[in-house]
Figure 1 (cartoon, rainbow, N blue to C red):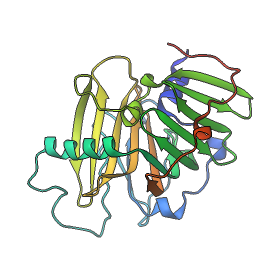
Figure 2: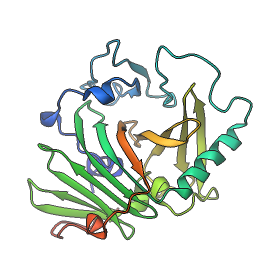
Figure 3: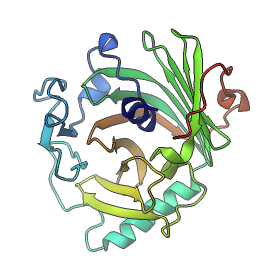
Length: 260
C-alpha cells in the first residue's frame, strides 16, 4: 500500500481539494491551531486568517499546540493547581463513561481542503462519518475494522482500526502500558491531550481538545507520520443518545483489505 494511501486512511479523511468550501460560521468562530507542512508539502494552503477565524501556524517540527481559547477571554488556566496526571485522569473518566456521541463535523485536511458531515460514535469500537456532498465518502468502523466506501468509484476498502490514532477514542479503556501521553496543554476553557502508541502499529498521534471543566470533546487533531495535520471540529454535539445498529453496518464489500 502506498504511503499516500496509508496517510489518508490513518487520518480518516478525504483530501478533496475540488470539494473545498468556505468554513461554516459555527466553526470559523473558533481559533484553529495547525502546523505548517511546507517542508513536505509546498502546496499547503489554509483558510485565510482574520479576526473571526485566527489560524496560528507553528513549525511542523514542534509539537501541535492545540489549545485554542477565544481571543477575548482571560483568566486562570483550566484545572489550575492540579497536576497533568490529574487532568488526564479527568479525561479518561469522561471518555470511559461516554457511550455515544453525535454531532456535525468540519474537517480541514493537510492541504487545507475543507469538508463537512455528520458523526456518529458508539463506544467501544463503532464510528460513522457521513460526508456531505460533493465528498463521495462514507466511513464506518465496526468489529475492529474501518471500511471506506467511495461512492464515486463504487468501491469499499477495509483496514484494521488499530492502524489509526482514532483507536484511542474507540477503545473500551485507555491502556497506558501501550499508550503514551505526549503532552497536556491548557487554555482558559479547554484542555488538549496528545496521545501516541508505544508500539509501531499505530500511524501517527491524536490530540483531543476538550471543553473544561466539562471534559466534553470539541475537536481533535491527527498528525500523521509525514507531519500532515488534519483538524476535525465538532458542533451540535449530543451524548448518550441511542444509536441504531444499522448506522454501523459495513458498506458493501468490493475493495481491498489493507493490511500493511
